[in-house]
Amino acid sequence: MRKWHLLLIMLSLATNILAQVDFEKLRLEYEARQPSLDTMTTYPDVSYKSLRVSNTEGTTISFWWMPQKKKRGTVLLVHGFMMNKGNMISRAKIYYELGYNTILMDLRARGESGGDKTTSGPDIRSDVLAVMDYYNRELKKYGPLILAGYSHGGRAVIFAAEQLKYPVKAIILESIPYSLAESFKRTYKIQGLPAMNEGNIDSSLEKISGIPLLLMIGDRDKAIILEEALKVQQTFRNTKSRLVEFKTAGHDLTTSAYKEQYVTSIKSFLQKNHVKKVYTH
Image 1 (tube, rainbow, N blue to C red):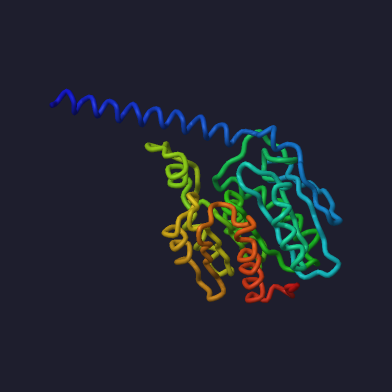
Image 2: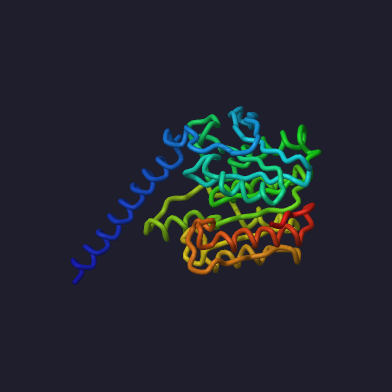
């Protein structure tokens, strides 16, 4: 009996060690520069400028500036982990058609930005802040700034906004991983994860709790589950913030089945927060 018990313990330890090795390999692959993402496969179909700035570490951050004729406000969109700014064109188009100037940026080690390694931790905030610096220095006449992030990009937005360096009118988050460790466990069925540099998202959310925030999640998403979204909701300190759940949806909420609800949720949120005028079609 003792032999079987000892064998089970040894098998459990071996499984955990293998899981850690697999996780480390996965993490290194994900954080590394992705050659497949270096080339843009899609470009804006409206007038735009390609611009560059440097973050505080000296890394070049690339972004597209898509201005409107009227200065109603600007949405700064941040992409997910295995994406670049070109992959966010369809989302940018939604905001642009609602009447907003739009910025699409590449995080470090993605797309046309510099760097060999990215991160999911608080360090990523400097990429977003670099673009915000430029906007507030050169483009703030175009109206209030709205931050929007998809998945991993939503975490970058939160960490940037918590610095409270510049006024932010509203924040829109789509399918953000609340806990990277728990998200990895659910997605890859990995146990015994090593420590992760994911930051204290609860503390960050508390700091920005006065800013109207729209959090959109799919009820079948593994990156963030309803229980975690409700924890985010508990940090809301204003009546204008909203949590919207998309039934039967996964991680991407812009697919055709959910597009109408997606656009309506954003439009309603921005109208409620009086972010200039939102166009209706």
